[in-house]
Amino acid sequence: MRLGSPELALLVLALPFASFLAIGLIRPLRRSGRPAAAISIVAMAGALLGAAAMSWQGIPVARALNPSVLWSWLPADGGPMASVGVWVDGMAMQMCVLVTLISLLVQVYSWSYLADEPPPSLGRYYAYQSLFAFSMLGLVLSPGFLQMFVFWELVGLCSYLLIGYWYERPEAARAAVKAFWITKLGDLGFVAGIVMLWSATGTFDFWPLFQAAESGGLHVDGLTTIMFLIYLGAVGKSAQFPLHIWLPDAMEYPLFALVPSLLVLIAWVGAFTALLAATMACVERDIKRVLAYSTISQLGYMMAANGAGAPEAAFQHLTTHGVFKALLFLGAGIVIHHFHTNDVFRMGGLFVQRPWVGISFLVGTLALAGVLPPGFFSKEAILGGVLHGHLTGPFVLLIVTSFLTAFYMFRAVFLAFFGHAHVHHEHPEPPLAMDAVCRALAALTLAQGIWAVVAGHHAEGPAWLPWASLALAFGGIALAWATYQAGVLDPARLSAAFAPIDFLARRRYFLDAIFAGAYRFALLSFSRVVGWVDRYVVDGVLNALSAGALRAGDALRRLQTGQPQDYVYGVALGVLLLLVWAQVR
Image 1: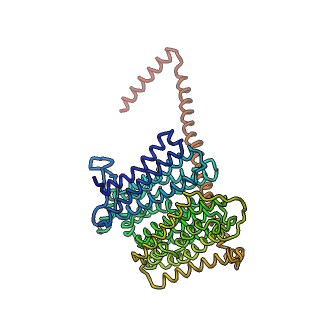
Image 2: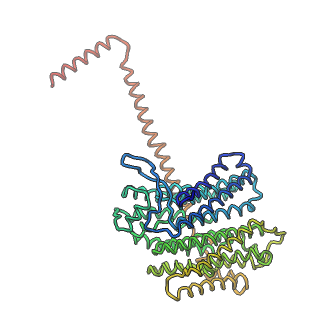
Image 3: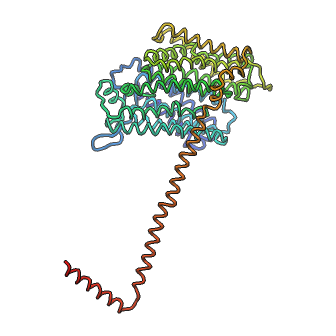
């Protein structure tokens, strides 16, 4: 029996979830380490094959056809309040291939990278990885906002678990908690927005909402507010300013098109985030943090494209960036494994010792800098889309960011691969699995670039734009070479030339301090006020009422003398009062 796209989508979802259940619930398997890792890798390989088969069957997908397959959920008298199912359009299929491929390669890489971990710890890691892959795939395949929110929260949970994997380290535990709470700020807006949208339209499902939006039949009061709240969820998860601070330690377009003022805001925030993160990457010493700030910056590019009305360019950059950024992160793992430090200023000379590692990392760096395709084409598509949207301010911010991207990435390359080593000890050969994964990602990056050239994926924009972008990229490379390789420029003098920006960037623009201050002086102060009110007002009122009841009881008890004549007098007085009351009436 040949499986169709919906069945294959369910299979792709089921395999990592089954792996998670098996590792998570079967204690001997989880504590075995390597067998648990093997099960997770085999399940992810099966999911990749299923995603590839689903994508192959679904090309081309007619946009006019409903790509969602739904089953009723939350029954009510007037019909189901919500549905669950899968969304199997072309974009979702491509994302399934990307998610399963990167997840598989990361798991194979981790087989060697975590070789020294105790078996129970290794099994726990692969349980988290399986759940994370399931959550990402569920998010990609969600046919409605409600199901999307469920998987959205699962992704946040998995991020918390993976960031805090080495929970015995205080900095890892703090980073995990920081990521969890910062993303929750955005999630509050997201859940409020989807509830308000359901209240106004009566559905959580994408297809009827998109159809109504494209036909002009969606008339919702306060749609700008609703979509802004939904956008806040994307701000948190994609680390946009000001909720970007957690990352270093799939926005649906038709509805946003109805609120152009919000799109302009999205474009400005995305472009500003891209530039802000790039300046922080330029002064960062930790190679992983450089890549983390780079990720924030590139996510800003994608959000700016969405705001400019070019979601296709944002998606193109997402799919290409996912591959070469995975290459750079995993390549950085090999670099750290070699030098036993994250500090790029304590590295050097790796290209001579490990040329294949250097070549792979250089391929990813050139793609990220927008010099090699596919990064060149996807970046040009974004810049052309922003320029076509007449957003001059965001365009200027992004073009400056392209210069800084080339500078900070080649700063890391020259220091780690071509500088003079500062630490002299025996450097181990990179494990075969780690090296093979990086080479595979480098080959895939080049294959994406060749495909982009052959398929003619050229950005639509002015003829000068590619040349200007390339000139800025090569300018950034030249500045990094002159400063950190040739020694023509003194890094201290370069920092002094941009002293205000350098000062603020090294202190992360005090945003961490602002959030910490807001937590201490706003949230904690509010909690103290609530505690005081509870202790002295609420408890005080209750204590006063109980004390009054006791005193009233003591006073009434004095009327009970135990003498019969007093009771007779009381009855007589009562009868007399009744007679007087009757006469008055």
